[in-house]
Image (cartoon, rainbow, N blue to C red; front, side, top):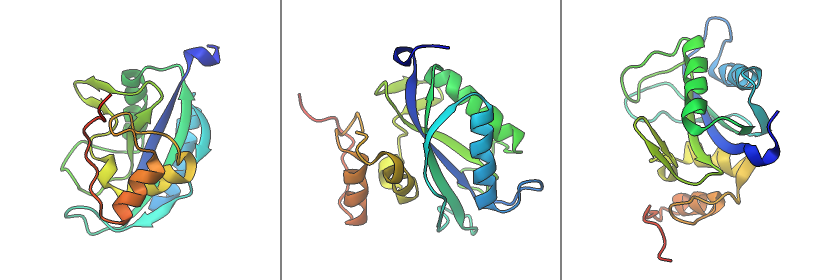
Length: 173
């Protein structure tokens, strides 16, 4: 097993707005997805409670959302591959943006700061404007800082609650 110096921390958002034949309602899908994350060898350090949120985009179904703080020796692309495998195991198919989905697992932040590669951007490009992401993140990692803005998750959430836009431009050195 790698030492703690060889491990990364990740904040991962979980979302569901479709029932699953085996797991049931979206909130139960989230619980099953957390179990699948742990079963995939990823150490869950903290898990936010599931919150129900209004749909985003053309979907009419409400979402169940949560977040987990995990530790792993995996690099961001390797973690993304593992999370996508979990999504596929739950029946997730690539498709229409904003459409109903059984499970959505997104890497939002990681302890390594910024990551940019084809198919993966960390921080997640839209997380600052999504209360359904920030509420669960703030419940488990309120002081975690966005490496782009320098703001803590709790400050991003506060700004969003008060309709103060967040400029994703890095602060001047």
